[in-house]
Image (cartoon, rainbow, N blue to C red; front, side):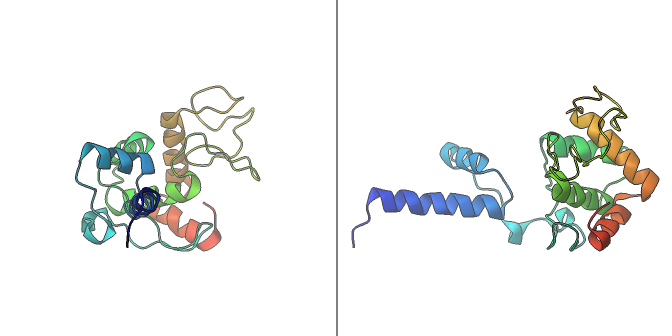
Length: 175
């Protein structure tokens, strides 16, 4: 049986797509790794146990929470550093990661069309009273640092810590 180039390319694209989903990486990152000859990141079955959060299910997203990455980048890396400065490491970090992954996928420009919640922590009331401590009231600030700082303060004042905030999210679908 002869294999043509289209079938081979389609199969290869399917493998890259599947692998990027399994290792929770962008397709472009996986493609860059393949093209540059880097060894692929380990899949979920080989992830280090310390990277796995306590199982979180329910909430608006349902299902199990994604494991916090051991070497995060961008907004997640900033969030990990800022959470650690509050002593929120280990299970607390994993809960925070899962919570904000579910809420905004750590996007500092995510906006809920129904509620108007904005940013990484999905803050409400970002208009004239601007909950975020930095940036203009209108439009809402897209500063990841300001959003994370506000979100950490909100969680601390309302729930005490990320584990409690995630438990509330799981039970009621919001935090």
